[in-house]
Image 1: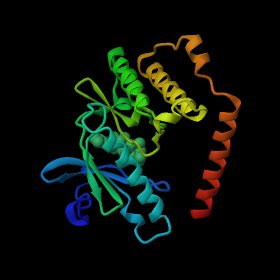
Image 2: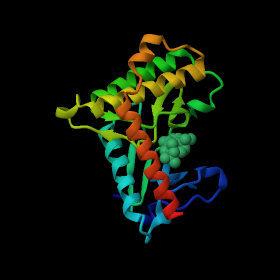
Image 3: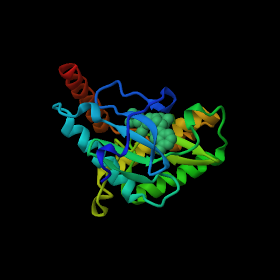
Image 4: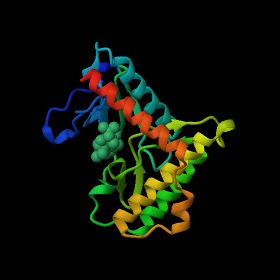
Amino acid sequence: MLPDHAVGRPVAENQLLKRGERLLEPDVYRARINGRLAVIKDYRRYRGTVLAPFARLLVRREARVLRQLAGWKHAPALLGVIGGLALGMEYVNGQTLSSLQAADAQVFDQLHKALERLHQQGITHNDLHGTNVMVAAGVPVLIDFTSAWRTPRWRHNNPLARQLRRSDLKNLLKLRKRVTGTEVPSELAASLAEPGWVRLIRQGWKQAYRRFKAHNA
Ligand SMILES: Nc1ncnc2c1ncn2[C@@H]1O[C@H](COP(=O)(O)OP(=O)(O)O)[C@@H](O)[C@H]1O
Ligand SMILES: [Mg+2]
């Protein structure tokens, strides 16, 4: 673990990549760790609050996924956990997929393969959209593993794991359609449709989350 003083807060506004405004959202900024350009996801504003244990959990979970993916070109390298409430990772020098004017199909083919590889390792991303994919020199890099889920090998085929993989793929096809205009073949879209029980869980989860937010606002 890196010591808490290893990384400061952003000093210049241009170092800030995203300010955490919603509940349990981190401040995300660029900084240097041991001279190397890094991105810090920082939940330290929750220190000493009732939400600190949840923030620590988010940091730990994301760090665990990045550690598992070490050495993979489609995820940033983990540089360390800072005092339990912040995470340092490699800075990906590129653009988010959503900010690209156009991306060729080749980027999406790579992304599709990367997603399959991720799934083979028992990990689902669960929040795949345009600002959670960076493209650097034509290579897509998945970021933001806050919502990712790891399933042990012996449970790979359980219905929930299968559904999470399906959702990731659905999000990928949605992104592809938005950025390249490619229609999703109808049989594929049908095979990725959500079963009723998933819709119910999703609605229940959303309601619980809204109530939790209203209560803690
Ligand atoms: N490793 C990274 N390299 C470059 N930019 C990054 C990196 N990680 C995050 N970012 C930028 O910061 C933004 C927010 O980070 P993200 O991990 O998605 O946080 P959040 O959980 O708040 O969505 C991303 O959309 C991206 O623009
Ligand atoms: Mg994000």
